Length: 260
Image 1 (cartoon, rainbow, N blue to C red):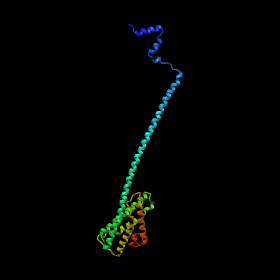
Image 2 (image 1 turned 30 degrees about the vertical axis):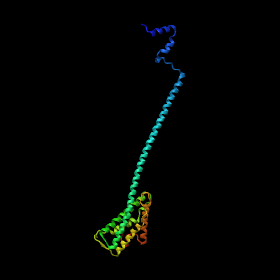
Image 3 (image 1 turned 135 degrees about the horizontal axis):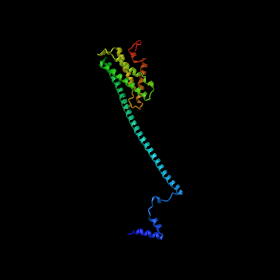
Image 4 (image 1 turned 180 degrees about the vertical axis):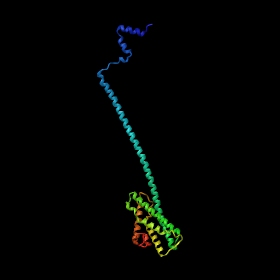
């Protein structure tokens, strides 16, 4: 049995009507594509150029985004690092301020304790072994505080190197030396010269105590009150020595011909 489609095609071929049908129903193969024409070349080039421009713009946007991401990442890292450094600095400054305030208040307490010991010695006319050791320890600790915080003031740039050198620490250690006597353990009776020495030491410490500003609520590392106190103590020391025409406190009990 013949196919109706094939019969129709043959009939149309005889009647000269096969072209339209073929155009409508024929399936194109690769060889049936329209031939390349030179006039179409610029159009194809323009299409490829537009595609290339879009790719180029996309790459530029991608690079820009990568650059922004990298910049933001670096910025965030820098902020986190700076915040960590700032927090560490804040904690360190808070710790130094805490120690500074505590040490300055102890310094004043030690001066008041020394004054009470001096008063008891002068009243009873004897120096007990415990009192000698206490006065040695107190003045050695006070000299250490003065030395340490004068050093801190220099390191912070608040004072120049000459601030290291102080008569206050030197003369505090002279008092330590005076009360050091490894051979005597019991109480010592005061003669007139010893009484004069104890009285002079008490007056010396009193000038330091008078230099303390009682209105200062607290001492902080960025506050000028603590190095003003150091200045005031040094001024009171030099004034005390000048008033009594002494180079150091040991001029009170040492002959000037002795080696100091």
